[in-house]
Length: 104
Picture (cartoon, rainbow, N blue to C red):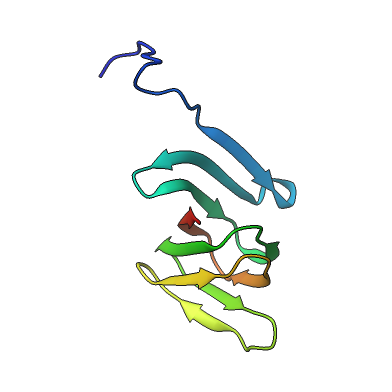
């Protein structure tokens, strides 16, 4: 592994996003599937909104997710769910959770 910066191979920086007073944090990157974030959520209750469609995959832990007009559904490690663009949804994490989110 090298510490050199080869801008011809990597022209995008990794972005760091912080939400809910640091309780939710993610790193943004470009993948073969397009834009994605890899993140963590501390134990807590959160409301998110989307501008584009998303696919969320639980990497570690359990998320309880509620979409408008629906009841909470549980998603465990390696399970995924889709969020349509322009949607607001709630997540409850009873313990710390890790996830990856693909956009578009």
